[in-house]
Image (cartoon, rainbow, N blue to C red; front, side):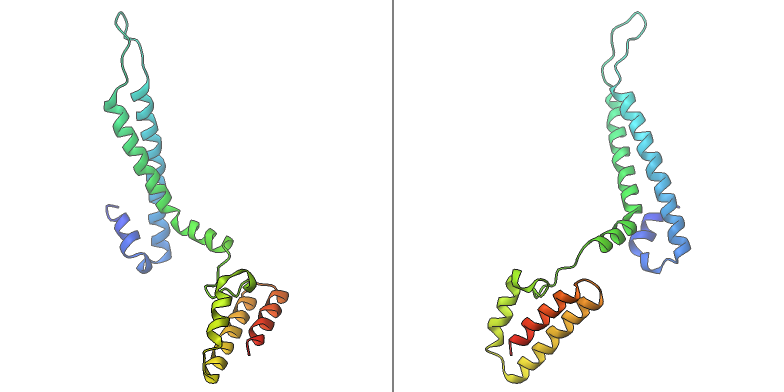
Length: 162
């Protein structure tokens, strides 16, 4: 259990799935317990109470400061344990941007750069460029990142270069 973070950070790709799930489950439990314990310490550190037949007490920084650190550590463990799920969610929801600017080509500056560079290329380079760009457009359509109408518009613009 002492090498949990090491396993996740250094050997993540070498862990089998069952070991990874076990380590992540332990991290989540430790994170939740740390957050709860830290919150309890913060509450104990900030509560002002009256001692019988005595003055009111001040906040106790002996509980407050460790409570803040333990809560932050627990939050870090919890977020780290959900790293794979957050990345999977991001990959599902994010729409990749093509650096060449062919997704909605007229809205991106990359299209004008390629069009201007195209004029200075040799015929062999022009043919290779067109094949490459058509391949990129086809890949986007095959991955369902663009519709067929967008693909046809991109294809038309690419072929107009020639």
